[in-house]
Image (cartoon, rainbow, N blue to C red; front, side, top):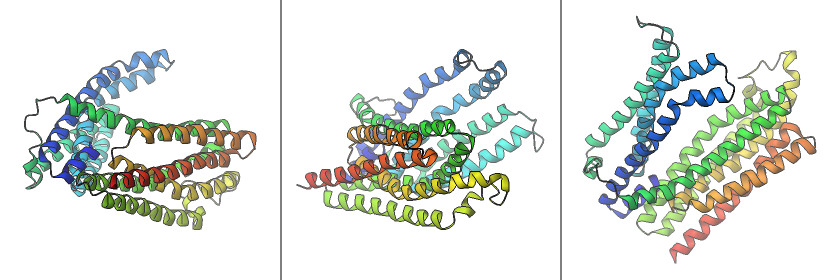
Length: 382
């Protein structure tokens, strides 16, 4: 949604913004219904995979409520992309912060039975999340209806109309973005399983690093979204020189931020590891010797990952999504996973080798993404 809205916004095409937003909401509904049906029957699948009856019952209790939050979650993501594409990202941040705080409080009150409410356990956690998801969605709807500039786009006018051409365009652009995200997330998931095969302490060291990196990575991820929007807006104006500059600014910003984080990780490794374990405890000495070199590799890799993520955002701004998806598959899984496995298991580098391997894959992806963005933006300039 965001690349198309940003492009239409840059071109000054209000009707196009309205149509993309409307079809995005339709897509949210069409995606939500089959997933809700699937989740409502998840207990059957869990039993087939050998889950214990008590686990299945608990999961069923939670999911039967949570599935009703799927549509507002997807619809909120659609409206968030629309509003951000119109350069109104700050209200989204405030709404998400508010929704998260409400969810935390609701989990505590309903889950554990506080302030006179009964202790509902998993059901209470689910109900708090449902209210939070619907609250965030409706809050963003209210913002789009009340803001003096955004309400002129009339995003919800003629909401019943389904435009198959725009709907299909969203699918063609969006599916590769989703697959790319799944490939990246899947790589870390598979690496985590491989870490487990190397032993409990290696897995623990990996989790310490991964949990730290995930938090840091949210910043270049946000920069990537912003880069997509800025490149898309300039692309809508057919000013590809400015679009190229916006892309380079986004990429540079990601690299600079992640470089500062890498310096912090390399300068204060024990303090960061100390957030998770007692580094002075003798029983953690062997874990510390494992996690230190892994953290050093991961710290340097963050610089490359910041470049990779913001460069892919720049490509998305040019609506180039299918080729980056193929590049992600070849580099993350073909190079990164294979190299990591060889280094970790055949060269005896263990968890450090797995981190080195996936970092090599990410580095190649980053270089190719930057090169491709340069080539595409230059070709469009001519």
